[in-house]
Image (tube, rainbow, N blue to C red; front, top):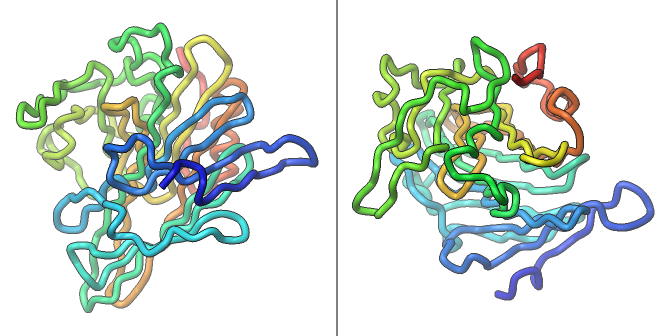
Length: 293
């Protein structure tokens, strides 16, 4: 389908120019899952993949043929992901504009007679222009995470480990890629690479995060993008300059679990952005201070 033709809306903060426009997109064509294009007031264009992967017992990519919808709602979009490895499980998603960005709600519905731990990996790729003029090895200076022991840290300053190359996929580890496990997460490896082997491609940091939030800072402007969730297994900066706040929830037998996810676009400094994140997702355990060296 032609990008931007099927579904679109403008979110207005006041009578005037649209504050945010989101359309369903089919570019890049190689991506097989659902994707949206987000246009911000300053003319920036971003992609959003609401569920690049889902893991229940194994990790699998989600393709468009697993979707019922998406459909336009009064304030956004809604659809269901089915065809999962546990047939009785489904993921209902609602996407809508929110102050300073947009929000997604994931309702994990379990129709089986046993509980399941479900991981969902939304992906928010940064446009190439965001890091224009910045060498690949220096991008780790412009992404920050709320570490458990040392407060907000640029990932260049965290205790990182090298990623593992995947020769079969012709993927080499990037100098900035890294995954940060949560202090409340379900995996507490004694060594970084004892974690989910799929994360080894990125490198698994020795630092843990205390909240499911990751922030990209524009190298030349007081401008940032934040991605966060209130039910998480950690955060990742990886491969296509993607920001990941990895969703993980335990879904009871014959029950549901609901997860909130936010993307914020920000003009200003990190303390102001951290305050906005706290208001958007009050259960986030963010560091008291939002300063960076």
